[in-house]
Amino acid sequence: MERKYDLEARLIKFAADIISFTDSMINAKAGNHMSNQLLRSGTSPALNYGEAQSG
Image (cartoon, rainbow, N blue to C red):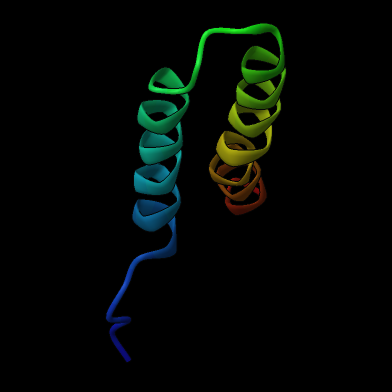
């Protein structure tokens, strides 16, 4: 059965969207803190999924 959506491709697109979004956040102390946390948590699923698929 062919999947309609490839999870790896979706996670990579999500990470790219997170990067674009955090680049547009306010450059202030609170904005930097929140964007850094969002960047870390939003990009890790793609990396974790790739690691899990490799064995």
